Length: 74
Image (cartoon, rainbow, N blue to C red; front, side, top):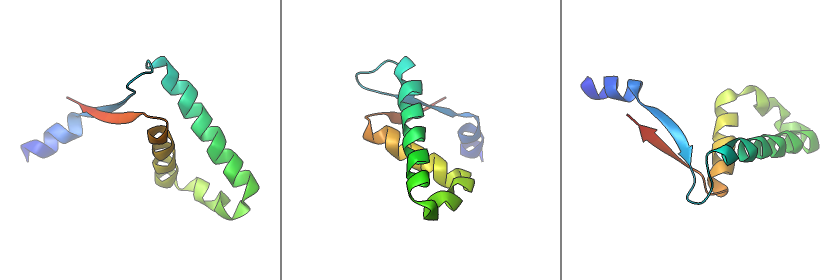
């Protein structure tokens, strides 16, 4: 039970080994643009844009490919 409470109160943040946090917004926006471009080119995936969970997963994967890692804070 206590672990559940701690997990619920914890938050995460993105870190990069060589970039400062200010660059997260730039990379995040670039990942969003890439996703929107994919939807424009392939209308078959446009319906997936409504799925917020899937969109977050794709953005997270894109950020990870750019070297960002999500860490948990207490």
